[in-house]
Image (cartoon, rainbow, N blue to C red; front, side):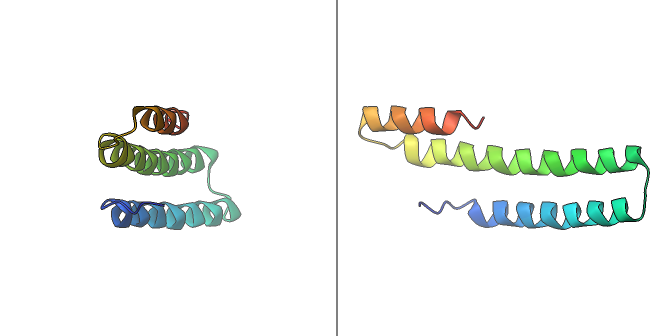
Length: 84
């Protein structure tokens, strides 16, 4: 696995999302409103989507853009593109 320069920042985003998700579980236990829960779940979903997007973009820019073997680059792009 290649470690990219953005990985520490992405890890921090995911840790925040993890903490936020734990907070939502507590909110559910406290019987908070469904509207509040949905809003918080939307925020966690957005954070995870943002982390995924950053990871994929960096992989494309750092790994695929500098690949020498066009066939391998195309295969890797197809493999990661399914997660977009």
